[in-house]
Length: 398
Image 1 (cartoon, one colour):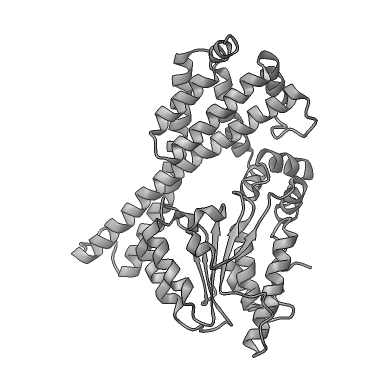
Image 2 (cartoon, one colour):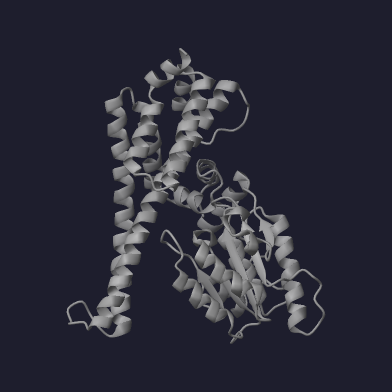
C-alpha cells in the first residue's frame, strides 16, 4: 500500500523515527502524556539526493494525517501537505545563494500562529545551510521559545552546516545514500521506465534520486552528461584545456540562463497579475520596486543555478576518475559510469593510480574553489590543465 513514506527511499531508521514521532504527536493533541518521540525542532541531514526534503514533507504530512496510523497518504491532510497546499505546512526552498533575513523573519512571525486547519503548524526549511549567521540567530530565537503546536524541520547536507546552538536544540535524523537498486525501483514504479535504464541512471546519478529520475526519463540529459564528462579526457595541451574549460563554463551559463529566463517570465507575469498590472501599463513606484526586487532575486538564482550546474559536472567527473581508479586497483566494485566502460579502461591503461589520485584531487579542489566564489572560468582552467597527460608525466617523473 502506498503511504507518505513510499517515496522515502531506503531510509528505514529515519522512517521509524518519524513514524514514532507522528504517533506521539497524535497523542499529545489528544491530551495524552508525550512519550518522548516528538519534539518541536528537527534537523534532517544527508548527502545531496538522499531525499531530505522528501522525508521532511512526508513527516509533515504524517503530522497532519487524518487516519490511523499517521501517514496514510490518501486523506486530505496527507495529500495537501505533500502537494504543498496545506494551510498549516510552509515549505521554504530557496533558489538563491542565501536565505534572506526577511524571509526568516516572516517565518518566525508565522510560527507564532496556532494551526488553522491541521493539528500542527509545520515549517520546512529545505536549505537551512544557506542562512548567514545573522539570519541563523534570528531563527535560533524562534526555536528556543517555540509555541506548543509549531514544528520546525530544517534540512541540510550535514549537521555542521548550522550553528551549534541550533543543532543542540534539534533532534537529528541523518539520511544515508540510498542503494542504487532501491532508487531504480522507485523510478520503475513512479515513471514506468524499464529496469535496465533505471539501474543505469541510478548508478550514473550515484543514487541522487532527483537526478536519477531526470537521467532515466531523458535521453537528451544522458547525452549531455556524457558529452560534458568526456570532454576533459580530450585535453592534450594547455590550449586544449582552456578551450574545454570555456566550453564547460559556457554550457553551465547557457543552461542556467535558459532555466532562469523561463521561470522569471512566469514569475513576473504572476506578480503583476496579483498587483493588478501588466507590463504594458504604467506602474507606480511601489510596484516598480517590487518588480525590481523580484528581478534581483532572479539574478541571484541564476548565479546559484550556474554554480550548481558546474558542481554537478565536477561530481560526474569525480565519478569518472573514481571508476578509473577502481579499474586500475582491481577493487572489484561496480562502476558508476556503465555507459563509458571503454573510456574508463582507456584512461586506466594510459595512466597510473598515482596520477588518477592527482586528478581526483584536482577536481575536488575545483569544487572547493567554486564554493568560495572563485571565478568559474579560472577554476575550470586550472582543473583541466591538471587533467592533461603532460601534467601526469611531470608528476610521475618526480
